[in-house]
Length: 39
Image (cartoon, rainbow, N blue to C red; front, top):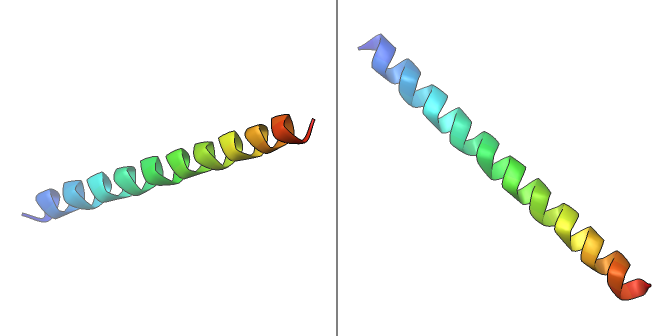
């Protein structure tokens, strides 16, 4: 039972990590497009 909760917790952490990564990627893309527009 404890193990199941632990796995669920890990899964949630992974999902949060992926969300953070994808939002960082979006930010980078936004910065790049801004640079291109400015040049």
